[in-house]
Image 1 (tube, rainbow, N blue to C red):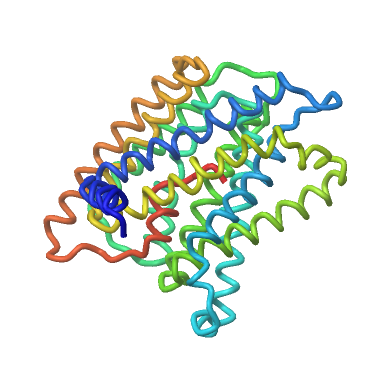
Image 2: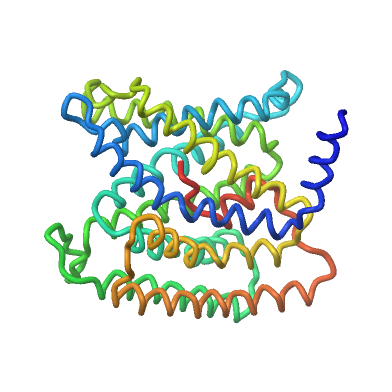
Length: 350
């Protein structure tokens, strides 16, 4: 190894794991705002009257770009010996997670970004952690302390307030006497799909190598979304998918948001514990709102201030619970990097 490369490697190794985690959270939290910004850029550069950076194109091409990068990074894990160790139920679980978290959840999130404010998508997405906790308790029998439960309940109340206190919109859905915006409903649906994919991961996919998990998830989700669009719409929906203008921005998006964020996250996990992961993840809604303000000039509404404040209180209560739980145990819970990403980060751009 040459001296400059060695120095660069040593410098990267000196960066604290917490810094990598925080950087990953900032990158992932900015994903919603970056997606909205890219679609606005596409609207200013129409091709034959259509937006080349539509939400469908962003999701599909973004997946392909990320898949190429992941293959370059993790291709060595895809070998015959490793693949033979996976059972048919492993592949079934991988397929389920890929469809839920790689195709359906991002699709609903992208639709939500087209219908409502980014801040709404960010805050309503916080319904995912309380739902994961509830499912883990009732389906997996996990034991948690009262602080964690209280934090989950308060955060859920904050999400509900964010939804119910919204000003009336033109596109509303009647839900049991309550009027809910379609965008808010789509955002909640995306978070629910992510929560269920996390439960599947916790039950079945703990021992799956990260490279196999990431590449298969990305490849399967790209295929499922492509078929989904063809069935619901028509092939012309992807008419601009080969536009150089689209690909140049998607290469940047895929490398920075998807691959860059995940590499920072997994690098941080190597030298940090569960408390650091939970603490870094708690900054996600704040980073998302700041990203919307800095990139889009989106100022929070009163409903978002109220709901967001309650959510932050819930996050603080959860942090107290996590700290007390770790103080009572001599060893930290072991969770694979793939599980950590699904459980702690939520929506990651694709």
